[in-house]
Amino acid sequence: MISFRDNIVFMLAKAHQRAQGALKGNLQEFGLTPMQCLFLEVLWEEEGLSAGEIGRRISLDTATLAGILDRMATAGWVRRETDSQDGRVARVYLTEKALSVKDQMATTIEKTNDELLNSFSLEEKLLLKRFLRDFKE
Image (tube, rainbow, N blue to C red; front, side):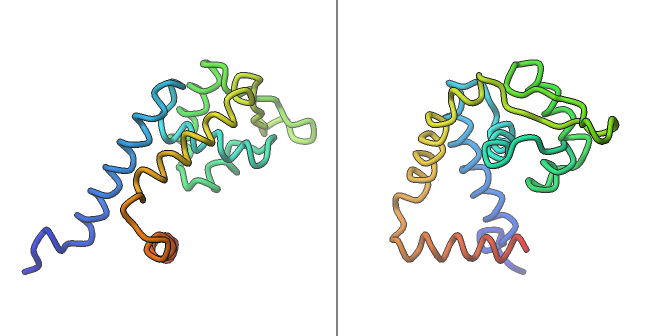
């Protein structure tokens, strides 16, 4: 029987736990969770997406996405507008609040990545990222 220490599921879970904990701690000053931060990152790349498109890009189910969107709209990070072509679709846009912290949050995310990867060589960092992308697919 494989030892839990060599079990890939256990190792990935522990790595995820450490990474999420680091990011969560660094995002406290903004009052955002890692998933809310990811939501904003998608919109920083492209505003006016539908909630469904945001969910597809970050692999979130509709129920989870709806809760995140509601909390972020209530907290003033995003606003929803009905699509002019299709009234059933709500488009999501960043507010001034979200736009004003973009650079600061980008720095925080980079800092978190650097903290998590500081013991790796450049080659190891590149390999880890490649392995994780391949594993995800």
